[in-house]
Length: 123
Image 1 (cartoon, one colour):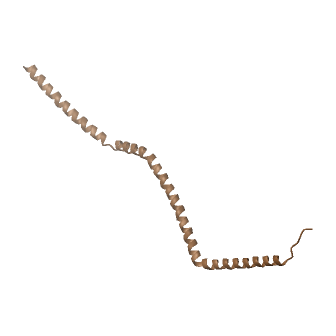
Image 2: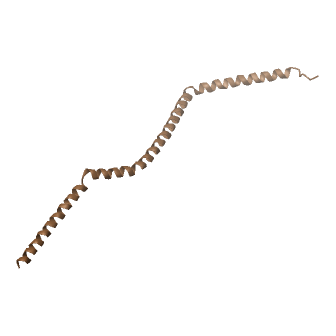
Image 3: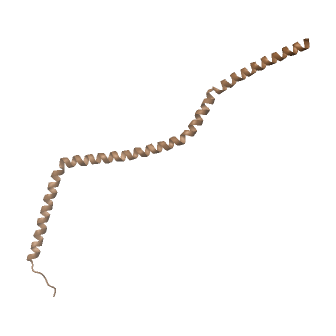
């Protein structure tokens, strides 16, 4: 009986030791899983995956900024032209009309002069 009881005791000690060992292994695995280096690995993996998408988004944003800037400059030029026309437009249009009237008078005067001149006939 002594052999049998020592075998049972030994078997119980082995089971306790195995349970303790598995418990320690579990604690060790949890420590490794929560280490910063593993976290950095996952961050690096995410960055490598997301970086190409971010580059595409960055390019689209830059293109949109260029288009917006062009439209802003167009609007600014239109505003300046409108303000200039409001300030000086009527004066400039009046001068153009006067110039056109003088040109029309000069043209009609030239036409009258041609009518008065005798027609030259080829010999």
